[in-house]
View 1 (cartoon, rainbow, N blue to C red):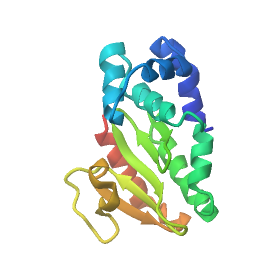
View 2 (tube, one colour):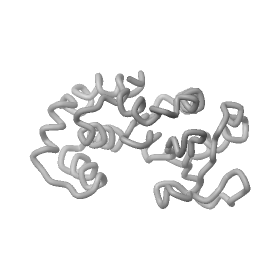
View 3 (spheres, one colour):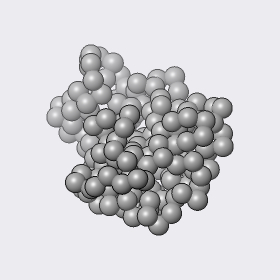
Amino acid sequence: MDKALQTMIDNMPEKTGKSLNEWKKVLKSNTFSKHSEAVNFLKKEHNVTHGFANTIVALSKEEDNSPTDLVENQYKGKEKLVPIYEGLLTVVKELGNDVTITPKKTSVSIIRKKQFALIKPASKTRIDLGLKLKDKPITDRLENSGPFGTMCTHRVRLSNVSEIDSELKKWLLEAYQKAK
């Protein structure tokens, strides 16, 4: 399991008043048609911060899979992409101690107060990195969001670790700074 996520789960009882399993029971007693409805319920009805609420909802949906299992399943048959994924996580973790890394079934959300990046293995040879960079012009490399729709404003296609360069790091930092 990702260290930041495990720390968040370990701190959950102290910070939110309930353990992850207790929150899962709370969510099971309600019906939500959207992820955001469950997040808003936890925020409004239980005063849970956005980062914890988003993590609780994401992990409760994947009842049978740990966050590590979710990431492993994403990269089955795409193992050559793992160094790119790990390289992106290294950069993201250096942005600040308020970053939450939340694995889901097909992607990994990177959240500050709001999601600012999304890592998704798009094919056997490419990771798509979604970024929220409102009002940033589209370029050959910093494309429109494509398959991410409104979750991100831009997409960068990565096929090699060497593409995690200073330009990409600058975009990640900018997205992080805008997610206050």
